[in-house]
Length: 252
Image 1 (cartoon, one colour):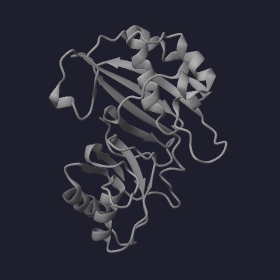
Image 2 (cartoon, rainbow, N blue to C red; image 1 turned 90 degrees about the vertical axis):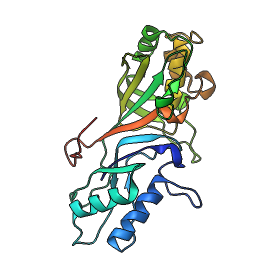
Image 3 (tube, rainbow, N blue to C red; image 1 turned 135 degrees about the horizontal axis):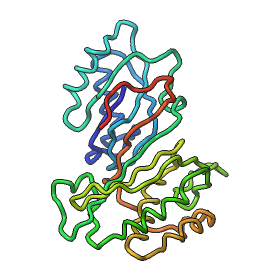
Image 4 (cartoon, rainbow, N blue to C red; image 1 turned 30 degrees about the vertical axis):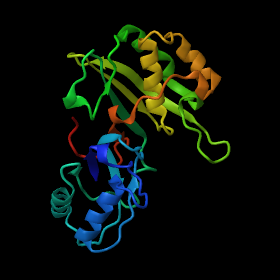
C-alpha cells in the first residue's frame, strides 16, 4: 500500500497501546475487511505529528482478497485523516522496509511575520527573516556518506551505526513566504531530518554560519547542532525501491 496521512491526531505510525496511531487505525480497518489478523511492515516509522504522502506498507492477506475492493473499503473507513493512494499485489517476499533503497522527506517552513492558520498543521511558522542563500550553502556538506550522530537521537542499543548516505538536500522557494527543504537518503536515523532542518534554520537566522555545518557533522555531537524543528512541518514524501516494487501511486 502507498498511504498518505495527516499525522496531527496520531502518536506516530508505530503501534502503541492506549493511544491512536496510524498503524493501529490501518490494522483495525484491514482486519475488519479481511477478517483475519494483520502484521504491518512500513518503510520509515514517523513520529507523533509527522505526516506522510508516500508511506509504503506491506502485509500478508488471504489469497482471495481483491486489492481494488480492499482499497475502497479502507478509504471509506479511514478518511479523512488516512488515505490509501494505491494498493496492489507485491512480489513474493516483498518487505516494505528491507527492500527500500531510498526515502525522501519534505519539510515546510512558513517564513512570514504573520502566521497562516491554513498551513498551521503542516508548516513551521518562523516569523523572523531567513537568509535563504546561507541555508542553501549549508546544505552542501550534508551530501554524501557521513556519520550523522550530531543530528540523530541515540538509539538504546550499544554502538549502532548512524552512517547514512544523503543523495540530495536542498531548499526550494515556493513563493508566498513558503520554503520547503527536500532531502533524499538511503535511510534516516531517529529525528535526523528535524535536527538538520532546525540547524539550517539557525543558519538562516544568523545563529550559526553556513560553514559550521561541516564542523557539526565531524563533531558527532548532538550538542553541536542547532534546535529541533517541530514535527508538524515534516512529511515522508516518497520511498524508492530501484524498480523492484516501485509504488504505482501518483506523486504530488
